[in-house]
Length: 491
Image (cartoon, rainbow, N blue to C red; front, top):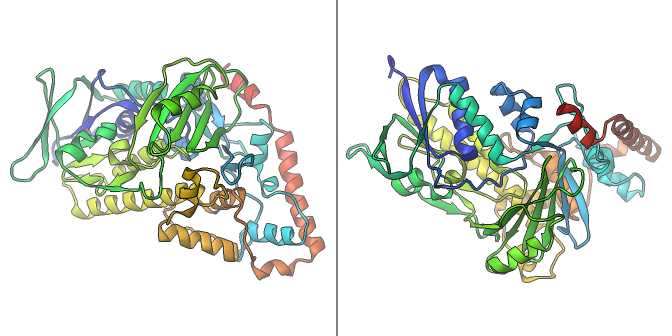
């Protein structure tokens, strides 16, 4: 391998395939010979249209200009997610990307807020978060100097096309064809080549499985097992449809719970992306389609598409000479917009551990361990939304509220409820602010707070909170309207 470029074969296009191709060709292309194989016959799921802030770092690594990206992908800006009917019917809250309030060395901000609530002073928890208040006020300003932590809503198909152009410009060979066979070496069990329906053979040193739920390489050819999360996540199906844009786009995603799951609404520049995530044990495909179509803001622009999924993860995401990225490696669900992020983090993990002269077993083990931990951390955060609820108005919500959850999540919930603390591991994606916003938003309030708060008198605590609230409000007042900023960046 020292004197020749390694041949990397990416099986499958879509977001996972073209994100991988664009990143590898941009950052490691001088050492790699990269090709991507995809078939026009195999459609893209294309519903991962909401993102979280790390995508901005990924785009920077690829040298993507934000203005061009927003224009090409019909993107809008995202400051968080509004949750309706999750803790109780008719309740709503926003899980934003911002930092709430100000803590100290011994206690995060929620301790000061809980103390104030018990003393009947102060406002709502969200009053002290800039991103949350900006979202509610429909305000936004982006760019390098923006005071906001933000992400995007984007057209997944346009994003994949955009990345495809970048990848091909950086030397990726795009091969059209449907994979009909995966050939394994008789001795090592590694993949040696892919055989396509046009009789073409594609050989490689490293194969990356971006074939989606089919997991054509990792699951079928290499027979790597799958750990199910279905005991904790009862939804196993979704129906998606695009609809007319009937109002100016809000700078947040909407997640509206219903009797057997929830509905998403994602505002783009030119349309809404809509979907209904549901449990097939509690609702039929036909009922889901009818419910979604009856709850669109505007006329449908596409035919409703139902897809089934099994929540969980591959037991290994790097096995032999194959790495699974995207849906082939596992799937949790769309609730907190983590699908594109998991693709991105897998790519970055691969590039950090990429074999130089020869494959390292230690690097493969590290890749698999980090992948496992990442999925479990995200799983726990998603399960939190279903578990911490007061809803018992349907069999679905009764099952969610009463289900047993992973001990790691159970410990987090108990710790917060009893002490107000949130214990975050180093590699967790969602930090303290996310956990507190969701738990408080869904009605879980700490019974106690850290004693360091008592160093403040009631008057000092009131002044402390009011100063933060006024600072947030003053900052929001200076921001332009979300649509105005979109118009500005599209000039």
